[in-house]
Structure formats: C-alpha cells, structure tokens
Length: 383
Image 1 (cartoon, helix red, strand yellow):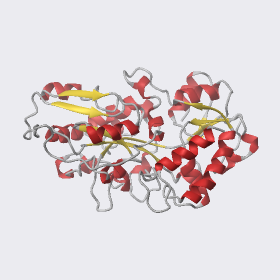
Image 2 (cartoon, rainbow, N blue to C red):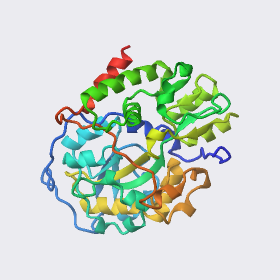
Image 3 (tube, rainbow, N blue to C red):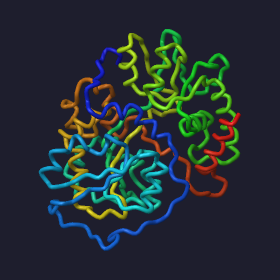
Image 4 (cartoon, one colour):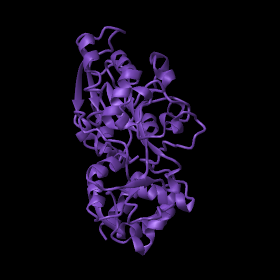
C-alpha cells in the first residue's frame, strides 16, 4: 500500500479525509413512523419530467454527486440542494420532521432507519445499474429488514483496519484485547465514540453485540475503561491520527484507513495496517436512500441510478479514495484510489461484513440501548 501515490488534487478530497469518523457518531435517540406520499400538497413528478426539479439531499459533503453529476443535472434541468451534515443523530432527526428526496446512510443505520419508517423500501427494478453492483454489497444484510425489503443503494465502501507504526510496533496485535495491556499506555489514539470499541470488545468476549444485555455492557465498559486509559489523545480526523503517528506521539490508531499510509509517506514516514480478529473482515459502506416523505421520487431513482453507473461511480471512488460499488468501474478508478482488495466484495461467500453494529434505539427487555452505550462511555470519559 505504501508505494501507491495518493492524490491531493481532487476538489472535494480535503473535506472527506475524516468521512468515516461519522460512522462512529451516534444515531438518533428515538424512532417514529413517517407518512409516505404527499407532503404539504406536493406530489411526485412523472417519470422523465425532471426539468425544474430540486432534489433535496442530506448527508456527508462530497457523497452527493455534486461534482460527478454536474453535467447530468444540467442536461436534465435538476438542481441539487444539500443540507449541512452534523451527525447521524441530526440526519435521523431531520428525516423524521423535514422533507428530503435523497439521504446518505451509513451501514450501521440502514435497516434500523428503514424499520423506523423514515426510509422507503426501494423498487430495485427502477435501477438499471443495480445488477452490476458487487454481490457482497448488493446482497448485504445491512441493506434489508427481516422481510427482505431493501432501503438503500451502496455508492462507496472500504474496509476497517487499524493503522500503526511498524518501527515501533514490530508485531501487529491480533486482537483488540491486546491493547488492554499496560505496555500500550500512552501509545494509542482513537475517535471519541464508544461504538467501535464496545462492539469489538464484546465480540472478543463472545457477547452478541450490538444486542448485549445491560450486565454484559457493564463488563465491556470496564474493559473499555482500561483501554481508554492507554489512549494518549482522541482524534477528530484520520489526518490528525496520521500526524500523531508521524510525529512519534502515538504508535497505533484503533480506527484507521489505508489512505493514511500515503499521507505518512508524503511526510517521509512509514505506516502499516492490519485487522483485529474481532472486525470479522468488516468495513464501512455508505448508501443512498429515498426518505419516506420524498417528493421527487422519480428523479431520486434516476439520480441514484446515475450515481452507481460505471463511469460516475469510478469518479466517486477516485474522488473519495473509496471502493467503487460497480463491478464494471474498477479499471476506470484513479490508480491512486485503488487501495482496496476487490476480491472481498466479488462474492457473497467472502468474509467481509458490513455489519449493523449499532445498538437498538429503544429498550427491548434487558438489552442495552444506544443511550445505555452512550451513558457508559460518558462515565468512562468522566474518569
């Protein structure tokens, strides 16, 4: 990986360097059903009649096709209106109360939000490029509810490694539990959020994350407290974590991204990456959904179909330094962004899992909720 040159010229890359940080920001604290169809007297437009349509989008900047579909929007008379992104909490709350035609959803939240009624079950026959989406993405459980309804279409993906300094970590850890050792004190960095840490510690103990009981969560909290005690500082972006390792302030970033190797190389330093056993080969996948209160549904379907078309999705992968979701796009991706192993998405039997490891929003018996996880983390952070 370290011998791949990293692109810095794309117009939106700077805003996306920390895009996967948002996977670890909380989902909403409650769920409510939304009505589909007309909102305020507005109705969906007829198929093909897009001139004058404004598509209202909510999600991470750079993943809305602002650059990649500029020509398509001009040709079809479509305007894109993007709502600023703050957190997944905020997205969920706005989907319950405001009107949007397109929403970006991270893999931990797709089925959760679909079951909450804020996303529309999709008619996949309306997406001509759907059959070309890599099988491990197209068939992913994270896109579906128990009845098999699909709520979102992948547009970008990647895996979930940790990144470390091989000069100071000659033998990479196999399990996240190794980081509980006092020998790691002051050598770690991570994002200020419990989900990744709680989930992997639970998997290591054989607990059914994210459906842990409150007693199980209490045990995990104490292990996480020990791990956090070994963290020198929390970081807000992947670039921050890279800089800390390059400066010699920390030796390992628990949540990492292969792109960090290239950033470090540009500074004359060498980093490497690996995967904890508890990650199950897991990764991140961002997808586009149509909210249940969408107005311009036909235009939204057409827009999503363009986003996963071979040429456009190759541009998206190049600009975001992500994996393309279209099997016909790989050869079109900028070599600087070809940092992922595509064999892991080519077959549904491959080990990668885009897991929905977010705990439930509401209480289910003795199962710990998202609020319980957040409260446990707050106690750890309070000392």
